[in-house]
Length: 250
Image (cartoon, rainbow, N blue to C red):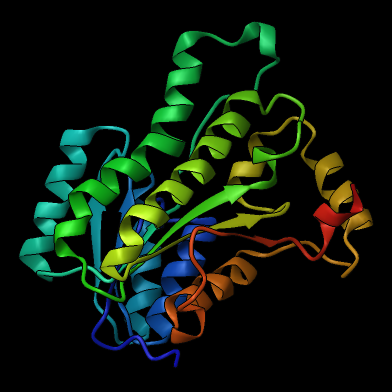
């Protein structure tokens, strides 16, 4: 039920952190992988090396998913290389960490384009390569439903992302395509290093998590694998939270 041999998975922002963990997890079950990145070529190559150790093919594609024309070119490359796509994971994310009164229109548009609108473009361009039984996943965060200091644009964009997933689930469901969101708790990745209060965030999360440890990228990757399996066939348009119970503490 977790056998992904013969399937092809695209992971945006797949060079590091959660994206890398998902790429390796899916490859470990037999999927060939496309790792999308923008700046971190060396990290992407390291991810590819890990995938290839599992005897799976890994295609690296440098693409800014906020640019529709770039995404179109990426799918042309995928079509040439594989001719189909079975799993689409929208994981690439960005945004500025500033107080509300310091935010500009550019900050807002940047976060919305990369964190939310990109999924729409990815689905529009990728759908012709997808078949009944394909899976679409978006990676979100608890900031979509909680107020987090300096997280305004990212949190709002993640809320928009989750709403988009629900609408896509309704439209793509009749085609046999499952669309869901994975919402991760506090995960100690490179992205968290940009938070000035990183240590405070991690220690608070540890203290408030009933299971007594932080969420890891591998925890998130396990849920991605589950959503790729036949066991998740009737899960559609949902947000699955992976946080060890952190969110239930209020």
